Length: 322
Image (cartoon, rainbow, N blue to C red; front, side):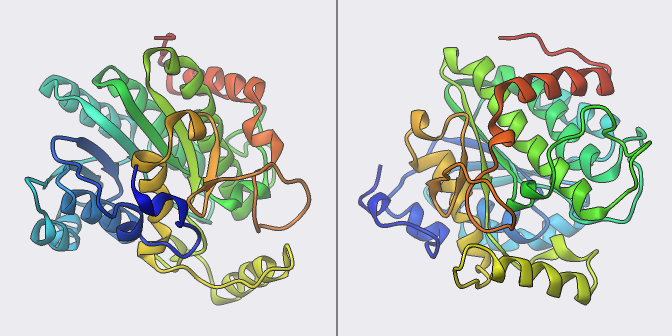
């Protein structure tokens, strides 16, 4: 715990959050290290001495993007890259199997990678693109490597205020019968990220492994590449009109701050099974709009258990309680 803990908040950066923290000897997996939040997350962790394993679909792109990570590594920090395409369960399983074969443990897993507001499509396994990539890919990866996470380890799932767009549809997760809307699909996947953290935390906390979900904030990264300017303007207007608070974009170092706060700095019992934003645990908030708080349905333990069972059925793999 650092002295900065009491002062951090919405405007804090990753360096603010980890000021004075030594991560030498820690081994941390971060998905999505080819751009944006993933690169910044890997950078600050390696700069504090962590051995970061960065996962990315395009390794050439990731190598170029993570030069800053390697050049800034200190106190024994380092970065290794592994190939991971979350839209292909064959790739997910190959990545997980390779990590398990190495047998090296993880102190922290940050499920950072994702897609947003994509046109309707399917993953290679036939899942709706956003649900399949953002949730099911990470669901299989994390569960397959859960044995590498020992007492004191944490899982941080990147969710979003976008979870407020929609709860998960347990009856029609792939939009087989529901008209497709890109932000409804995004909302379902981001709610699923929270559900996954809630149930993973319940299943593993008895052995000292905790899980949480975080909202990084409004950040302009490659995540928005599928949105038109009109869509982006409408989204920003929604955020500006909600809650009566001024809206401003976060920088990438500010956006990645909540991930490292929840994974490294915050007390485990405070964040376990919860949803965090602005380097704090978020309160439960009803109502419309995207600003502030978590919808109660996202933390519903019964919904989380039901999604777990559905996810196992969809991927054809069972993950018993530890």
